[in-house]
Length: 453
Image 1 (cartoon, one colour):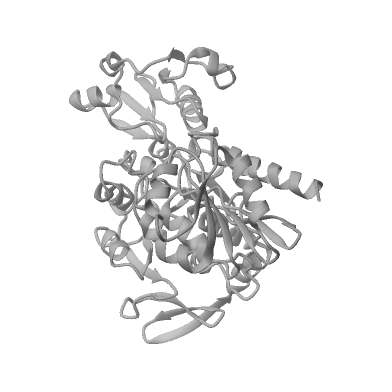
Image 2 (cartoon, rainbow, N blue to C red; image 1 turned 45 degrees about the vertical axis):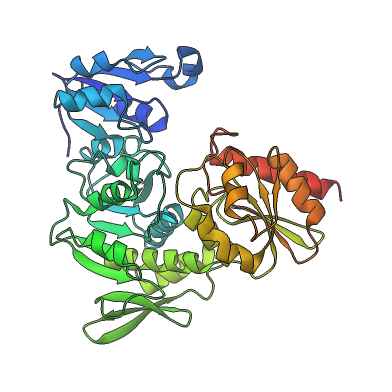
């Protein structure tokens, strides 16, 4: 697919990696591009070098909506942005970069969304497909933006897209041939006006699917089952506790992932050598296996990908073992569900570093799992007050001024056999540029502990 923009003036809002990729793609197809970012020009120098566009920086002037006939918006830009409010009033189309890139790609799209595990699942799908000799590209929220990953692609290319609710909120024609929906729970409620709106954005992934397409759906949550029901695609369910009346489905029989269909069960691949801890990661592996199998991957391809998969940085990443205490970096865990899954992944006593910029939900939902596995909580960031209130009377919470102090205090309190776990349940923007910088700082602090042994 491709479009001609030579007669169009197009606005791109947000000049991080997806916005820059969108500008370059649009210019390559003849568009006149205006690029807007709320940051001042002095903070955009590295992004805009060689960018052939009119730059409007430092604010979001609503008048821009009257000067363009299409807007491409970067993930995370709120939909109540004054330009977008004016655009909707003027019926100016608003696309995500996901939508823009999709309109220009050749090949097959596999989209993965959900609250937790998107990056792991998408990466596993890519790895499985590559084991089979396929041209599989990891794009979207992980890897490159779609708009930057189109070169040398063909009808045989498989685009594995990690799709966020931000991106899916502004799609139009985007249609994955395989749509993967992981489990969902409240998240990004600092951006979405409600949990229902968050669910509705993710469910849009199914809207353009046809009877020729597949939806791989977490089958142990009635909410996800209902979300997928809106589409025309063929449903395939998965889960360790998948509702057995949902057919076809993938479930576990010991270490084996088994496909159940038409009254028969067929072993697909074993997770025995899959090294990532946690029940949730076994379910991520199951979702990846199901999606890849629908695209023709063999059991051997799946098994080999599992055997060699070492996980992603900042996702239950083991950093070090210091004096018998294991340190894990789970900086990607930016919501309540992710932290619960992280705690449940371990049997040893946990010293939990929790806090950041809260995105919604209720810390009290963690009280049960904390009471069973957490010795002490070290609260950091903007959400410290909420954490202290949530665990009053049920857990020991210590306030810490920053991550350095939290790791140091955890180190002092830990004993051999304990686990120090950074799993924040919040975004990093109150203290760090992004979750990667937060995780890298955690690694550096722990490295200092090792060096000082």
